[in-house]
Length: 113
Length: 111
Image (cartoon, rainbow over all chains, first blue to last red; front, side, top):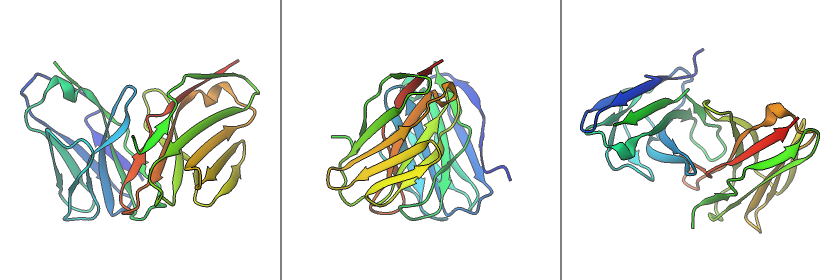
């Protein structure tokens, strides 16, 4: 089992370019998440999908869109990248419920120049 | 006020000592609390969870929860250089879908 897989691992974009970060899980979890991690800021929730067919905004959704393609896949799109979106992005998956553990992908380090 | 507050550190302890990591939270409705460890350049991984007031021990790790004071802590006994990492405090939000993370505390264990 691969768990949660993100692609790509590294990406450099020019300001204004677009890209999609891919995330897939083989753990049969209902809920999937996109976080960004910046120095001193911890993990901040961008968007989440509580279950297939639903998506909701998190703490920092501006500049991003998401698609829950099916139960396994949850993608994050930057339509017009900005330097402020330089960050490490993590996808996570878990079962619903307060007590459930979140499993993380290996992260995508994105630099916008 | 942020939902989960942690001292960013760094916290430096000698090998063999007890490392004490602390966290406060604002949502009184939260029922589940987690400690994740994140090595530099890696993704977070769960090391402890606690739901009830009091202490929970797992090997060298002890999680402590005090809901009245809205306080959760992690003790690492016999600290090893391999424990050097960032420790993220997290809680399950009352809606049940989101995990809210603190900014993390960097721990250095000196050999």
